[in-house]
Length: 229
Image (cartoon, rainbow, N blue to C red):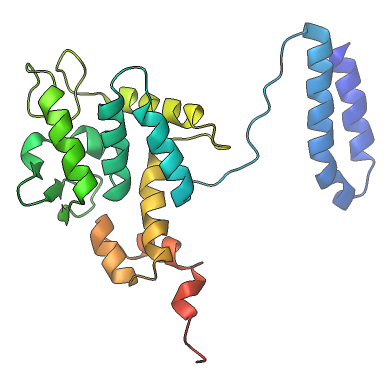
């Protein structure tokens, strides 16, 4: 029954002119979902309409607050997301971060880049340093050199870190499907929106090719300010 009704709907859509056809795709998708719901009685989950691959600063704040309130390991999760965002780290780079990479006395962090990117050393802000000190105090005593570890002291896996970020996004109730690489993109857009030089952003993010950086600055109108004044 569902199949026959779906075919009828598709036939009717195909009879429409092209411009109506495109806009009608959303309608038919909704109708098909309704037919399935009536047939199975199962609840329907509609995916988010937002498809951005980055977060605005206000959304980052919500994500960090949600991570901090994690039922378990809120401090660790909060710090992991903060460092990934502030230093444009991929999820595999943040899980590979070593205690020896973090110099709290000098306020420096060594960002070991992967996938052909350029490793570099960044300054750390005060909130990062304070969070690191707190985490290092409660970090499992059996832990090896990795900064982010499980409660057994083993290195946090890429899959676990991915899940932590995704769960924080759900808890923050953001209208996006959150994944870790959004943190790196969010860093790039934040720096570009401050009007910083593209070369500086390239160096900070460890991009070997400037083409990877231009995506963040290309749509930023702030760089054109003052051209006519």
